[in-house]
Amino acid sequence: MRRDAATPAWDQLLALLDPVHDDAVLFARRIARSNADGDDLFQEALMRAAVKLPSLREPARFRPWFHQVIVSVHRSRARRGFWRRLVSSETPEAARQVAAQIGEDGSRAADARAGAESAARALAVLPAVQREAIVLYELQELTVEEVAEIQRTSISSVKSRLARGRERLRRHYAASEELVPPAIQEQVP
Amino acid sequence: MTEPWASDFRALREHSRQDAPSLERTRQFVLASAMTPETPKEKTMTFLKRRPALAIAIALALIAVLTPVAYAVVNKVFLSVDPDQSEEQIEEDVRRQLDEAGVPASEVKAEKEGNKLRIGIESEDPDAEFPELDVGVRGEGKRGETLEQNRVQVNAHCELGPEQMKALTDVVSSDEFLSPVINRERDRQSDAQVAAALREVLRRHGFAESEVSVSGQGVTVTINAPPT
Image (cartoon, rainbow over the protein chains, first blue to last red):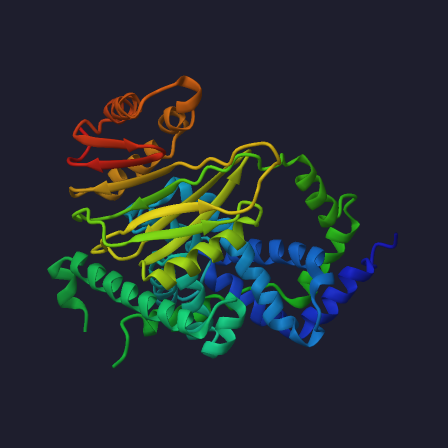
């Protein structure tokens, strides 16, 4: 086999992936707890997509189909840790781990990195289905209908997930503010 | 009104673009994957082949609450599960049924392991009052063998911190705890004997102030005080 040639399935996958590649990479990174985790998620989704490609009936629908694969892999990964968790991940240790993972990616701007870390921590407290819905709608800027197709659920379920996710985010941010010592709060403009 | 996370999300949007893999890098990954002797398809088939048939299904509904909540049976909710479905299909199925029943479940996880099927349900609503869940098993499983299910419901009537909650869920999902439930027929144990065995497991793990009631294959655990 030539080193620069893939199998027909991989070739077909690459051709379909071309126009949606960057969007899919960003979705995987934003839904994961760090850019590195997101890249792993994306690669695992690629492997699964190569296996499942024959089930894609309409190549024109590759974009939502591939996002569905990413969601599926994301949930599989979340499932592995579920039985050990079953509690809120909103612990100081979890927050430190998330912050450390983001930090390893080497962001250039400290403020931007702090904001990204804060967003990653906030998203990490959401259940997987709410995190997906929030990322797809607010960060990927998809419509509710598109989110419903990717999550393979109804529009009303997506709206419910968005509402619950936002409410949980509000509680998280409110709790975070309460933890800031008064002396530091005063310095915040 | 601007949400408190608006600027953080803008930062995350930019951060996720930094050093993102290019299409060319992905192409290199794909080429490397295509050159490996074992293709993804072969891996999947091996995995399936090694997996034993699901002869006996055990549905374990674990319900975790994060703050004190009075136990109340609001309605009996019947969940129907087909153990022949994939984990994802079961999760979707249960999530849909809970949605329809108005049960505030934010996370549903199904996990097949050997001949067991475990279903975990976590609520996002700390003020939720959980209805009694009755998990029915659809499908026939393997001919000639019985489909069995056990249900464990956990209620905390006291304030538990994240670590204490984790310790609790670790105990009630452990083999040590589930073994007396699963093997009760084989060991010819009465409801009272099973309950006593479960209380002892909880006590060994620091949950001395706990109540366990066993009725048939349903187990209800009530934690009245944090672990010592």
